[in-house]
Length: 331
Length: 279
View 1 (spheres, rainbow over the protein chains, first blue to last red):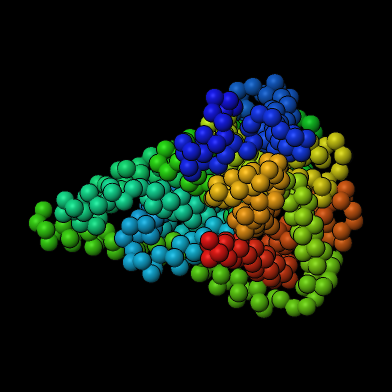
View 2: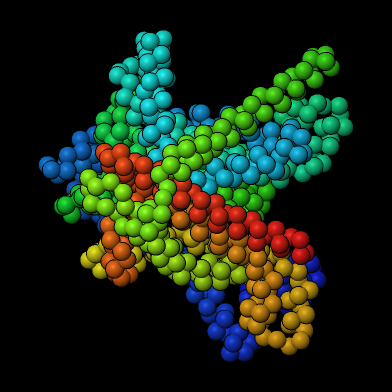
């Protein structure tokens, strides 16, 4: 608490800073109640966040005790026999997310550079608006579109020629079902592109104009300015943006569940059905009959939580490092 | 490289990034095209006014799911709004330089937690003790998703309120809580409404956290402690079912859902636009 400097002095020192309305000494009853409410809200958020981890850890304890580390490295998922190994789901989540990033990152960074640096002024607001709308489309709508448009298109038009021409690679072997890893990766890519684009654009816009002016003043072209002065300056923020996209992809549930085929197998081919951690939760949670089954599913949820918290925490720190904590708050 | 070559590279990259931007926007147009094409044909008054028909019968609607969505969103707002706004005020007005960082970081990380994980949390702390799936559990799960969004927008917006306003209030001898509730928050109101609408737009489309909290229901709302239908749940159930008429209704439902989501987003935009004009 700012005991060393009264509120007025703080405001004089740093005019942009609000006076210390929340944390100050003597106050009336109303102020004490109001302050109590505010602190209660703060603690509520922190307790809920801690409770989230604690509740999942508690519920998954039976599975952790029963299977230990084996849970992560075995691929036998047989609820009837009480055998639970989560490897196919972990593999499916990682593989579909990486496939999505492979497609999404070049496109998003390109679009962000276009919107923040190279595009003529009049084109920026409408395109930025369209990308914002893409981010607002609910997951289940992507899934619906995936089932009835994307999957048939892949099955009839994309997978057969891919299989004929590149079929010697294990990646493109097997019957063209349409549903499977390729469809999941594509729909995920479409879904994370707006996030990565929006955050990258904010990062690029947060790069000080003096950086650009210095490079332009030395005779650099538009692209050279972007490459030397802007991208290098915003590099950590851009990595943060990509990690935010990765966090989204790892936890994305509905659209993936609807197109990935939901089969707990690890296959080399992108045409084969697969399963992700989030999908198995969506499909099997309400049907889980035994306590151990529920516990195993909650353990998958806990793993998902820990991985996404790690990825997102890192991403936030990187994005903050460029623009300060106010940037990217709503992404 | 010659100056001409460098300029050429610059334009070439400009073209490539423009192509990337076009490719990024393409899926939106495709998705909208299909939603309009498939959805409009399936829309009729029955769709908005009637309950789902039993399996095998054609027709019926999703009126219960539309009402259910509003109920669950209302519950989520009731859970998340006060906490989010007060937490945001704390972040914006605290004079402490270190401690707010923790809350800000926790809120941002919570924002990235997969929504289905909140569903599991609601299942363990609401569904298991109550021994049944319920609208309350669904509202709780969505409320958790709402909190970080409202919290961070409120912070940003309260920060924008000029200090002179606070000083004027305090100088008149008003207690701080009155300055905060009657001066600062009203001044930031438009921005806070924007944050709330952004959050509502996000939770309105959530399906995953409701699968094992609200569960879904083929009948009208039967009390907050009972399973309840929502529009996204209904779209999901219809989309993965093997009946053509249900697929038709899934498209119609998706069109209605996305219209609601965009209306909420639009309301968010309009609220801040008024704000920036006024300033």
